[in-house]
Amino acid sequence: MPDTDEPKIGTWVPFLQNLVGIPNENTFFVGHSIGCQAILRFLETLPEETKIGGAVFIAGWYDVRNIDTEEDRKIVAPWVNTPRNDERIKKILAGKATVLLSDDDPFVAPENKEAWIKKAGAKVLECHGKGHFDARAGITSLPEAFDALLNFRL
Image 1 (cartoon, rainbow, N blue to C red):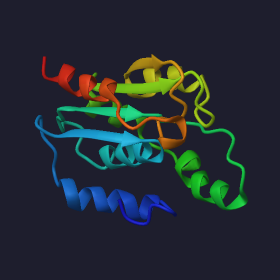
Image 2 (cartoon, rainbow, N blue to C red):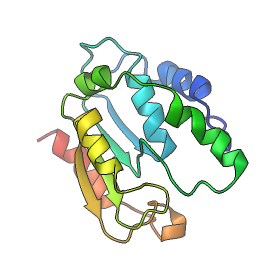
Image 3 (spheres, helix red, strand yellow):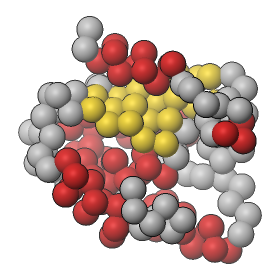
């Protein structure tokens, strides 16, 4: 993704549009943290009848907490505050969404579980002790994400 130090909807969504084009049943998405928001916002730009293979969202959020700096709050604000067409996104996901959340994620509040179920129709896998699923939490591989992708094909 471009400009990862300053992710913007207006940069990331067009990047995905150019990279992916029109997805189909053989197109799978995997996103982490703010990247999950980018995938959702890309999906809402597609025709409602679009079919995808599936999406795995890791440490994805609808609302985020513990954003300490003003700079980071400015980055996150548009992703949280810009409305999404959740009904369109949910139709495109068509039950083919899995979200991995950790019980000790410093940024993703537990309330996000219900938001993912309601807004995206996602299956939520709750993981223990994986933090934000990043190097700081000691996560260097994530077989749960791979398994979730494989389950879309079963």
